[in-house]
Image (cartoon, rainbow, N blue to C red):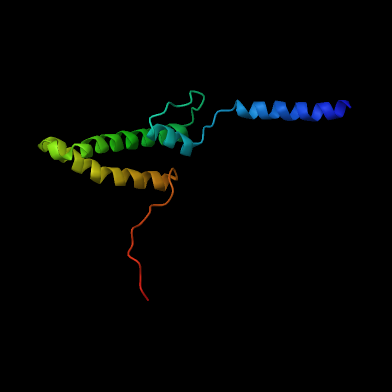
Length: 115
């Protein structure tokens, strides 16, 4: 009888110990930062910090691009130039994120081949 009580109690303790561990995966750090969510203070690795830095920069650039694009008809010259710079730099930073393994492969819009 004691053994039957001990097994579920041990499983519960193991699950609660796992639930308390922070998720310090760099891919998760990248996505959290890209979506403007806070970092887990328990995660201090260089890989985590690098992923957060790239994600944060990319997210800020995307939000700025979207804000400028939303008012494209009323942009002044410097804002139009900034929008062009963002449209050039964002794909480059996305490529860095793909190389680092933070995102999946790029989706290519290729024409259908007819044989």
